[in-house]
Length: 586
Image (cartoon, rainbow, N blue to C red; front, top):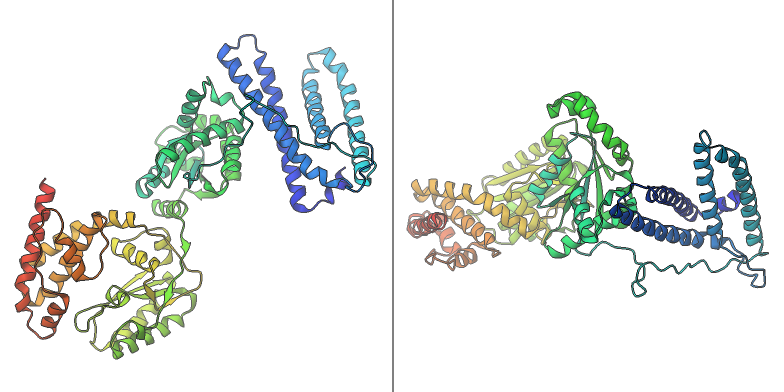
């Protein structure tokens, strides 16, 4: 049979190998459970649990046998419909061979203390040799068309007649789950807590989920169930919570100490489940825990007996947690919120409404950083140039450059040439950030907003193909506004205390920025200073802000008549600061 199976395509051969291995594993667990249920001292609740487990294992056994027959059936010569029909399928023979192998193994273990078992061992080996030979002969006959196989479907029924067996699947609202594994004091809880705090994940312990499921299903001990059944119970509880909390995008589960059950959960969930294994040496874990080494060793012994150390072989991500907290958190953020390729809209400086001299200098800078190769990932003007509302002698040139750390020095040289070429026509405000900082989501609120604008279609001057950027949601921007607003208010209050014509520009821009952040917090997304100030005037309890238009203010600034518009701007700032103080005092 082995030579015939070897001729199958790689995909079918691997599927068959995996299915038969799982079938033999299920038969082994079924044998152990049937032994356990015969215990004279077993309580009625434990007997009920064992019966449920036996039913579940039998269902798995039949499902795996059918899957094996799907592959083995392809060996048959379909052209011989008149060939004699065999009494059972090839997978049924393989299943019998699995059970016979287990019987030999258990008999050999009992032979040392049981004379009857010892005498049976040679006969069992003889039966196995005969069954292997019969299987080989059957496969040869099937391949040659001398024998036909029956329909492999077993049509097994478990439970009520009106409730056919069905495989549990992840809810469409269960989008992403991180499962943290590792030995004692490796950082599982610390990592899950960080993901909860920074990514808004819902955090669970596996034990809690299993206990909840056991209570719901009337089970006394869920840990006595098969790994497959445990995985189904876990998925059922996750589905139930996800369906009840539709805004939750991310879940974490901790204490992954059983490699078999997490492997089954991975089969049920696929890529929606990401297994994260935290690795650290024994010495490091002892030092970090502050507890005696023997206490950590004792915990490790319990966890390894359950297969905790073997979770690493199943993990989607293995993290060496012997380095810095910064490195750990950066890796966790990339796993919890992976970057994605962003479709960016390219534009030339001449299409951004810039004066000719500014556009020319910007084009030269773009050509310079593009020549540096993939070390410079992106260059773009943000704010008013990206929005097409740049005003000469008023607007800044806010520039974002994403570049590898090794390329930053060359970017500095290009920036110096850029400033020289501008010749005072505009004030340049560059922001330099590395790709690692972005994917680790080490973002200021301002940078998060710029990335969101790029996602919404703001143009870029240069971007390498396939650039991956973190996805920024409006919800994240609203939270970022809460963090950024206090600093903006403090700065605006300082500028107000020193209000004079020369500070008009800064004072006005901080007024607009503060209003923009307040609106974001209220889920209002306005752009353009005039529209932002008008929308802010409608905030509950805020007297309408009577501020000249941006065109009037910028014109007065350029003409050296800032004093004419300073008073209404300062009055608006006072109104907003008074409103803000009242809101927080309430």
